[in-house]
Image 1: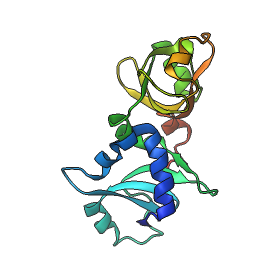
Image 2 (image 1 turned 30 degrees about the horizontal axis):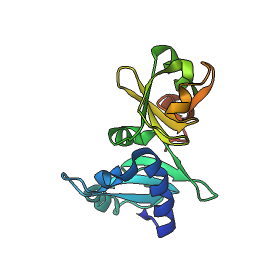
Image 3 (image 1 turned 180 degrees about the vertical axis):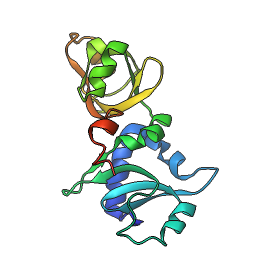
Image 4 (image 1 turned 60 degrees about the horizontal axis):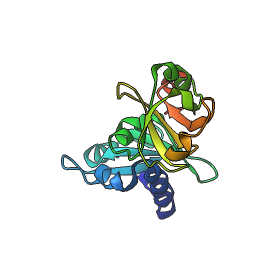
Length: 180
């Protein structure tokens, strides 16, 4: 477990900023306790400093997980966010998409969101922007990237893709062996 290098921090924060923008400061500067991001086996963990200090007594080989896993770095140096961070990024998301009940199951099975399944969208969402996908009852289901801006979405046909799937809560079941 170690702090992120300058390049890793830049890559990680650029990816995180696609979803929550400048609200990254709310994750680090919390009133209750000091939190930080740490790297362990190519995965980035969000952990309190008190827990991190206690974890130093555990050997690297024995330490499996620490805190909340925000994602992992690929071998090419890119960062891939995991669904385990959904509760944290949903709190501070700038852009949101609500999908109708008939679109929830296709999304939870890993499919993209089509226009027919859209209930509502945050106004002025640009193209290729990270969004949090909610059910109509405000339950965060996952996150993705917009295929079109909000104004372009209104002109599309019902079968056109509006949000590209990135991760969803169904991954807990589909990929439970690779999340840790």
